[in-house]
Amino acid sequence: QVQMVESGGGSVQAGGSLRLSCTASGLSIASYAMGWFRQAPGKDREKVSCISWTGVSTYSADSVKGRFTISRDYGKNTLYLHMNSLKPEDTAMYYCAASFLGSNYCPASRDFAFWGQGNQVTVFS
Image (cartoon, rainbow, N blue to C red; front, side, top):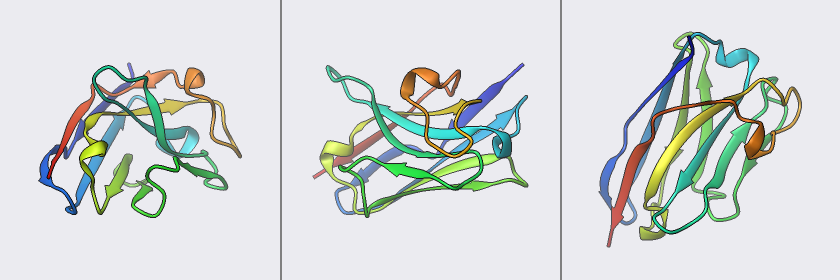
């Protein structure tokens, strides 16, 4: 059974930093494309960042480029999202996800089969 447990969210002042973690069990993150998504109240889900399972391709939404970085720790089977220079508009529920597609590319959102439970990030000004 696949489980993806997220942690690291919380409240932070604008300009601050947070690191989200997503520890997987039942799958090896080294063999899946991994992504971070977010959804704010009243808005559609947005793909924030993604890395192909080979690591050849990464993706970052324009809204987070230069501020957010995705990384993986294979030994801990954990995915991270390092978030710097946070803005109030980054406030959302953040989800990690895994896709068995995407060896050398970041899959479309619909192709992510396994999801974490979500972790709230709130940025106040």
